[in-house]
Structure formats: structure tokens, C-alpha cells
Amino acid sequence: AQTVTQSQPEMSVQEAETVTLSCTYDTSESDYYLFWYKQPPSRQMILVIRQEAYKQQNATENRFSVNFQKAAKSFSLKISDSQLGDAAMYFCAYRNGGGADGLTFGKGTHLIIQP
Amino acid sequence: DAGVIQSPRHEVTEMGQEVTLRCKPISGHNSLFWYRQTMMRGLELLIYFNNNVPIDDSGMPEDRFSAKMPNASFSTLKIQPSEPRDSAVYFCASKFGRLPYGYTFGSGTRLTVV
Image 1 (cartoon, one colour):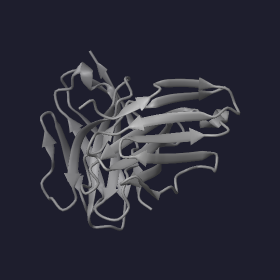
Image 2 (tube, helix red, strand yellow):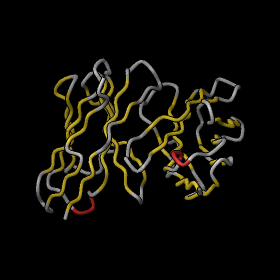
Image 3 (cartoon, chains in turn yellow, orange):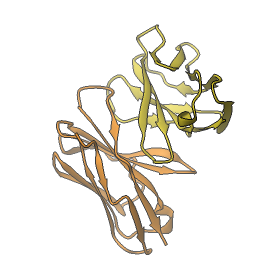
């Protein structure tokens, strides 16, 4: 079974600075998808960014980018120019490219933005 | 589209009572997922449906839990009888089944069993 590990229960960053959240995963598959979700206090799960394993180029969405290291099974999220609205729980998630559906989540990282 | 709609948003019930959580997926989405979120275990997949048919219920913790999807626009997760350890946030998510991404989550139901 696949596992997703987020080793940082909590991170803190100054507003306007850059922060990187870590995620590692374990799989024997070669085709899969990785995601970062944001969960603010409202509880809503919001997709931040997606990475297809077959793509070598790291995904980018505005201030959010990932560092995808397939050999190391690492998938970190970088948030540039942190804003107060970025404060939330961030979850890393994995999905096989085929076969069983559904996402496997890490335990999450609580991101605090210091004004 | 109003997104994935879950009801109720909060539910408080007494131990031993039956609890039913409801979910309306996004129109056109033919895959539906139920997740449970707790502090200890994080987000766990309980069950998912494809075209209203349960595909994988291996995450359902006990026989006290059951889920149905009578049609493409409605699903329920029932706990009978409920126990305090069932207290959690329950999320429903849907997507178009052919795609390996595009999951849309509801706002969740916070269940408290006292």
C-alpha cells in the first residue's frame, strides 16, 4: 500500500517570505499523481497544485510551486511571497495512475503566517 | 454549480443512536468518495462508488458503518449504532470517473457522539 509522510506537523513563516513544506511517499508504481491540498479553518479542501509523475517539469500555480524528485520520492511545496490567507493545514496526497481510485493523504502540516 | 453539498454541517448525537450523513455530488461526476478525518489518523478513505456501484469499501471501519448511493445525485453514510470514537469530520468528494484527478470535496460534516 502507498504511504504519504509529512514530517513537519507545523511550520511558521513571516508574511512575504518563502516557505517550503515537505512530503515523501512510498510506492512501487511508476505512474501516479501527486497533489497538495489546502484546508483553511472553514474545513473546505482546496486543491493547490497537481503533479503527474510522468512529467519531469515541476508544476507551478502562481505563488505555489513544487519540487518533484521522482527517484527520491519527494514532493515538496514552495509558497513564495507568503500571505496571511495562506495560513491553513496543507495536505500532500497520492493517487495511482490506474487501478484503485481515491487519494492517500499525509497527516498534514499546519502553516502559520506571522504578520 | 454549487459544488459537492453535504448535510448536515454539524451533528451531535448520543451514543447508540443512528446517524445518517448525506452528500450530493457535482452533476456529471460519476465517482463519489467518503473520507473520515480525525486528529489521530488524518484523512482516511472509507468507501468509493463508481456509477452508483460500491467499488472499494475496505476502509469502512466496522459493520456499524454502511454507505449507499441510490442514484447519481445522492449518497448516504450511516452509522448504527454510533459510538464516541466515531466523532470526526466526514467528507464527501466527487469527480468525473475517467480522470485520475479533479476531486472536488464538500465542506464536511462534523460528527460528535456523546
